[in-house]
Image (cartoon, rainbow, N blue to C red):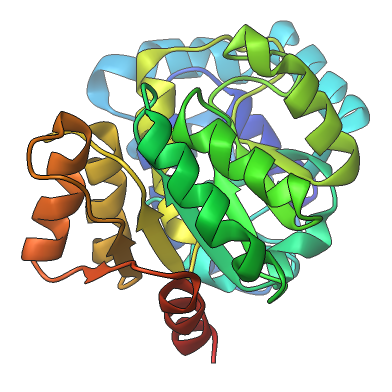
Length: 292
C-alpha cells in the first residue's frame, strides 16, 4: 500500500488518535525516510496506540467497514497528507501536525503569507469595526487569513477578507460535508469553491467539543502570525495563542477597554509581551517579518 493511502487508513481507524498518528509518523520518518510503501501489520502498530484503545484499534484496523471508509474518502475527497510535497513545512514542524487533511478549494493558498485570526464567538460591535478598519489594507498585501469558520470573530474575519477580494482559509471542526454553525453553511460552501476549506475530520463527522481544541492547533501551526481580536480570560482563543507561541509564531492582539470582558484576554496578552495592533501596518509588519 502506498504510504499516503496507509496514512489515510491509519487516520480513519478508531483508537489511535492524533497523538498516536504523530508518534507513528515520527517513527516512520526516522526508520524509513525514503520508503513510499507500507505493509505494516496491526501488531506492529499497537505501540503507537494507548493501552485503553488497543482492543478497539485492532478490531477496526482489519475490518471491512474501515476498508470501505478508506475507499470512500480516497475517491470522494481531496487529501493532503503529511508525506505530500505540498504539505506546509511550518505545519509539519508544529505541535501534533495532522497526518491527513481533507480539503476543498485552492490548496495554493497555503503558499501565501498566512495570518491567523481568532477571537470571541460572542464578539461585539468593537470586534467587527476593528476588522472593518484593519482588513482592507491587510488583504492588499496578498496575505491569506486563516480562521475557524466559527460564529463571531471567525466569521467576521472571513467575510471582511472576502469583501475586499482577499484570500481566506477555513479550518473546520467537522467533516467537509457538515456545517457548523448552521448559519455559516452558505459561507462554507462559497469558500469551498473559491477559497480553501481544511479539515482533519472524515466525511459526516459532526461537531464535538474536543474537535475545536484540536482544530485550533492547526490554525496555530499554519499561520506565520496569529492575531487575537477579542477574547475573554481563559478563552479558547488564548489556548490557540499559547499553541502559536509554542510553535514560535508571532502573536499580536487588538487592545480593548479595561472594563470590557471581551478585551481581558487581549489586554493580558499585550501585558505579557504580545504586540498591540493599532493599525493595519502593525499586522503587515509582523506577517512580513515572519515570512521573510
